[in-house]
Structure formats: structure tokens, C-alpha cells
Amino acid sequence: MREIDRMDPHNGAIRFLEFPEGDIACMVTSGGAALTALGQLMVLGGRPANAFDITAGPHEEKMYLATRAILERPGLRGLIAGGNVKNFTRVDLQVRGIVRALREAGIDARRFPVVLRFAGPGLEAARDIAASLPDLEFYEDDTSLEGAVRRIVERTREGASP
Image (cartoon, rainbow, N blue to C red):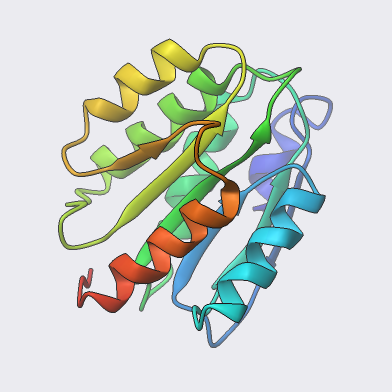
């Protein structure tokens, strides 16, 4: 992850921490939102595999590379990504990077649940990009971040596996 961050340290600085016992990849950003999502995930019985944050900016490539790196971890059972309403970041760029990585990794969202919750500039395009990957669940600001976390826990409990 450090190598990805060094590509352009002034655009989308990354913070990343792994949790050895976790099995749900977390790419929820915006500091407090990320901590809230991690806490909610644990309260609901989920096990986060990591903590991830990236500062505001046009960082499609960093989101793509970070998603690829996170998905390389063995034993993952699902992915949640998103955050609160973005003001300084186009969400379509983030979603495009994530979906590109998922597609290239051959992720089948029926077997490996993917839940995205984004809101902000570029939402319409983000919705279309997310819809291009079958069975990816995409939520907007009418669904709380906690609701999206609840959904990834439900999906991983339903027996979906990589």
C-alpha cells in the first residue's frame, strides 16, 4: 500500500491497517465514517480485514490499485466500500477504480458480496458504473452507512464465499 501511496503523495494520501483475523475487506473512507463502519461491522458480528482511508482528490488509479492489493489477501469473504457524502471527490472516479479492480480480479459478486455506499459529485455516473458489475449492491445517501454495513454482514453470513 505504501508503494501505491508514493505514486502521487499529494493526491489521495492512503492510510491502511490490516487486522489478521478479519474476512471482510473495508474501503470506507472519510476518517470518522470509516471508524463508525468498523465499529458497526464488529457490533453486528462481522470481522473487518482492514482499515482504509484515502484523502480527497481525483484518485481513480489509486482506488484501483488499492482495491487490487486488498483483494489479494487470502480468506476474504466480501468487500464494503464507500463513505459519507463527498464534497471534494468525484465518487464516479472512486467507483470506477473499484469496479475495474473487481472485474480484473474476476470477482463474481454473487459468491463474493460487494456492497458500495457512495454519495456526492458524479453519483449518476457512479451508479451506472456499479450497475455494470452484476450483483454488486450499490447504495446512495438514502441508505445509511450503517445500513450498508448491515447488508455486507448479512451477505457474508448467507454463505457467499470467494
